Amino acid sequence: MTTLVDPSTAEVISELPDATEDETAAAIGRAAAAFPAWEAVAPGDRARLLRRFAQVVDDHIDQLAAIEVRNAGHTIGNARWEAGNVRDVLAYYSGAPERLSGRQIPVAGGLDVTFHEPLGVVGVIVPWNFPMPIAAWGMAPALAAGNTVVLKPAELTPLSALRLGELAREAGIPEGVLEVVAGTGPVAGWRLVTDERVAKVCFTGSVPVGKAIMAGCAGSLKRFTLELGGKSANIVFADADLEAAAASAPMSVFDNAGQDCCARSRLLVQSSALEGFMGLLEDAVGSVVVGDPRSEATQMGPLISEAHRDRVSGYLDGRVDVAFRGRVPQGPGWWFPPTVLAPVAPGDRVAQEEIFGPVVSVIPFEDESDAITIANDSRYGLSGSIWTENLGRALRVSRAVEAGNLSVNSHSSVRYWTPFGGFKQSGLGRELGPDAPEGFTETKNVFISTEAR
Ligand code: NAD
Figure 1 (cartoon, protein in one colour):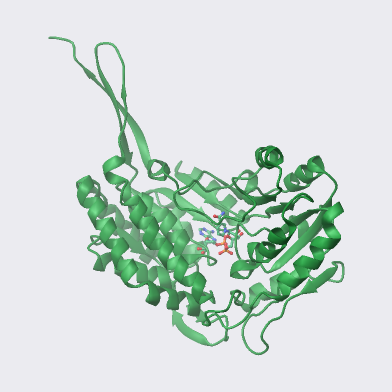
Figure 2 (cartoon, protein in one colour):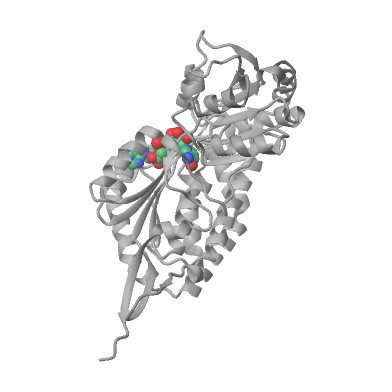
């Protein structure tokens, strides 16, 4: 049994039974049984069903957003964006079924063609920080390519996924094509990893669990993608538009209370600009509106749970220098103020570990090569930003930083039509973008002899 709690008030929302291993196996069984018919749905009809699913999600944006505000403490603005992202990802991949074409390759004596065959049942395992978008990033291209899906939300945030499962049925997606199993990681999640009827696992979550899943998938040579942690660098050169860089730096790390794998939690600032930049940054951090996630004006809500707040607080031991902090509401809820640590050395624990809270480490650097060395001094490589008015430098540093998703003079969030994923221990494989449906298929080569007989 999991107790769901509103993170902004600490009030209990409900008690939800955890799916047992047998119940998870039964859901996998239903998804396996539904696969042949779903695979056989004509591409145009599968596209139509996904478009209808997108439309039904659009009709329920406010309801889905309200669920996420309550269950995850997300700000209402973010939660609406997240529900809209599910709609958009479904709509985007509803264009895939009719476009999933193979190739015709020249050969002697016949015709050679390739097909993209769906894999079967895909398990999508989701963390608590972005329950809706991450569910959609896995399930939408998987369904579009003709697979059935078993979706396992995180223990703390199952409600939006359960609602999405109901909306899929309302939209006419056949029974068994999208199963939602709310259970724990070690029971329901692990069953998805080890059950031989599951052909692929899309996992988003922490590095240790990702490694265990990778090892578990080896048991049946299951396909997998891993989207794991991050410790991304926001690199500000002295030649940048410092006002714009300072104004945007807080929300590049404090958005979603820092519980974002792409959070720019290392702020690398060129020493010659450091003093002026810190003044601008202090003003910007002071103006971040932290409070009731139901208020339209709120920019940052609470952390997900008391245990997580304890974990984040644990990084602020006596050994770190707190430069300045923002404000938080008093009273119940798992609040943690926006916090700027400075100066931080590149090897410090707070510069190396993913804190997953509203804490940013300011690290001074001397020159371009120093900035690249520090940015790459991390086991992670998910995203990052580069602020400079020098185009050549922007391109050189973009090519040199070991990360999957970089933005120049901006902190672009994930776009569903561009590829997303990490270098190094930030993950394996890519999600989203035009090629994602192919990742849910096996390429089959067929040669047809045209020899006269
Ligand atoms: P987590 O690894 O604890 O859990 C993630 C999911 O895995 C949950 O659904 C959980 O129930 C399940 N799980 C746990 N143990 C399992 C097991 N043994 N077998 C199968 N499933 C298991 O992560 P979390 O704390 O929920 O999420 C935070 C982490 O996710 C952070 O490290 C963050 O950076 C990462 N994340 C990465 C991305 C990305 O795209 N790269 C996006 C969001 C979050």
